[in-house]
Length: 132
Ligand SMILES: [Zn+2]
Image (cartoon, rainbow, N blue to C red; front, side, top):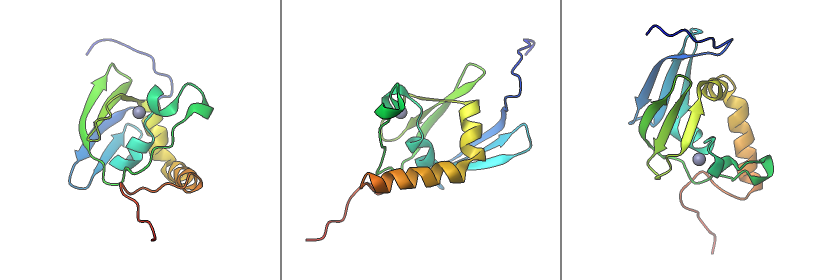
């Protein structure tokens, strides 16, 4: 590779490990950091227009994804990966900037998601238990 691209302060992955049995992805970064992402976490944080909308008010609450798997992670240019999930959702292009943030600030993002789930009356499970 001979092309020179200036990326500023952006972080780049040095290794992306897809662990299907554990339903997680481990990404090592050029900062020396390494973050673990559950596939469910990546799915509910999907940045595609369908999931996020074009405005915060259009953001969809994604639920029932506990145990979701990833079928493919493919590079998109020099800046992102496309992640296809086994719930047939494959339009999510995760920029490295976004992925780094999702790893670095995992607990805050996850906590925020759990609060949204609860507020929306939804669950991480693919099924619901109702009391008769
Ligand atoms: Zn999406």
